[in-house]
Length: 331
Image (cartoon, rainbow, N blue to C red; front, side):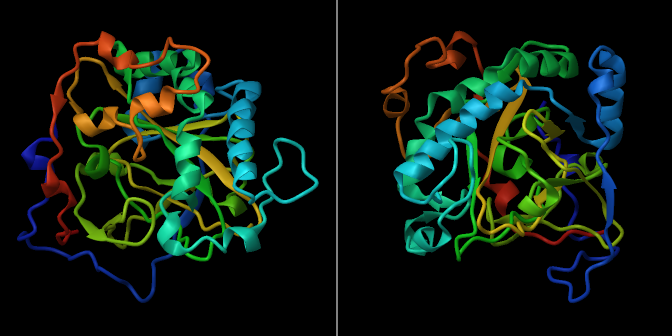
C-alpha cells in the first residue's frame, strides 16, 4: 500500500503551526518501553499492541552470540583504521578519540560515525548482511504482516562515535527516507549493551497514527527532522542489551538520545522489513555506500544471500522527492 494523499497534511489549514525552532522545549515524559516478548505466541495480540503503540520492543529476541559476532567483525574494522583503544578484548568498544578526531570532517560519514573509507569496509562485512536474515526476525515479521517477508538489502550500520563533528540523530520518521510501501517496518538492533547514556533510540509512542509528518532540514543522520507539536511528549526508552530488538513502522517518530560516553563506540543496525507483495523504492535494494554489490560480496565465504531478493517478483517504484521538501506542519 502506498501512502495516500490524505496522509499529507494541508499546510494551509488553520491551527497551531509547529515551531521550526523552540527556545523552551516542553517537558518530555520518559516512560520505559514495554517488553512484548510474552506476545510472540499470540500474533493477534502482537498486532494489536503494534497498532496501539507504534513500536514493539523485545528482550533477547536474538541470541547474544550472533549479535556479538557482528560486533567483533565491526570492531575489527575500527581496529584496522587505528581508532580502538589499547588493552581490550575483541568486543571492547573503547575508542581512541584523539586519533579519530584527526579525520577531517569532509572524510567522515557523519550519519554513521566513522570515515567514508571505514564505512565501506563495514559494509563488506558478511555478518552485517546475514544477521537481518535471522529466522527469529523473519518469524516475527511474518506474524506482523501475515505475509511472506522481504528484507530490504540496504542495511545501515551505525558506528556512533564522539568525533568532534557528530550530532545526535534528530526526531524523524523513516518513511520520507525509505518510501515504498507504508507497511515497511524498521528493526533497530543494538550490537552490544547500550544503556541510555550511550545514546540508544527513543520512540514517540503513537505517532505512527499521524501519517506523514512535514519535515525540516536538520543536522544529524538523514538530514531531516519531523516537526512535532508541543503536546507530543510521550517518549519511551529503555536500557538495551545485546540481543534486544526495537521495531516500529515507518511513520513512527523516533530519535537518538545524546551519547554521554564519548570514549565509547555505539554499534547498531537499521534493517527494514516489508510484505513481499508490497512495492519497494528501488534504492532500498542498493548498498548503503558507494560500492557495487560485487565489491561488497567479494570476500564473502558463502553465496546463499547474494542477490537474494531476485528470487521474488518485486514491484520497484521510484523515489518521490516531494516527501523530502520542507513544509510547515499545522498542529
